[in-house]
Amino acid sequence: MMFGTYRYCLAHLVVLTHLASWPGVGSYAVFGFYMLSGFLMSLILNERYGFSLQGLRGYAANRALRIYPPYLFVLAATAVVVWALPNFAPQVRGSLILPDTWLAWAQQIGIVGIDWQARSRLIPASWSLYAELVYYVAMALVLARNRTIVLLWLGASVAYTLWLLVSGAEWQLRYYPVLAASLPFSLGATIYC
Image (tube, rainbow, N blue to C red):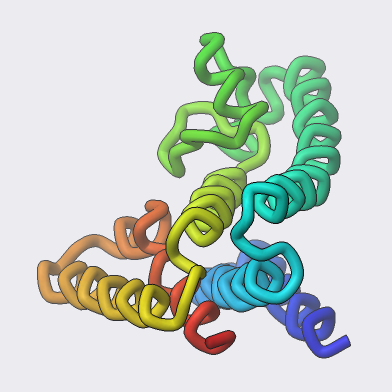
């Protein structure tokens, strides 16, 4: 119940950011989702699935079944709308154009390698799903295995974030890339530990 309420509030902040143009609020909400994912993935990896080959298979299957069916449904529906309204869709969102290469289609379908600056993103927020998938895999393979690793990960994430701030990196580079999600994910994992 508590996690559902937390997700509901974060989702509303994202929606308000897009509808009312509240700058920054939605970004913090996305990082809040990442932090929750870091906590929950650490929890289920350590207490439900474990790190055996069989446990990791179950974890991977569960993640795939939770993410890909609804994602692929929305992707297909969006592709149909964009195909039917090729002049209107890009006016709504510039990235709402059909991919023009097989690689771009593979990235859209697989959610792998989708860049926030990609010319075509049929689901505009797919860049954040890509970050989620990267950390789901990294946590299963290494990052969530024990408290020491999680704390080292947190330290590296803090150092990276401070480096971005001190070097004057643009806001987009502190928010969109996969590495930018490391701090909230590692914070969530640390809360679990």
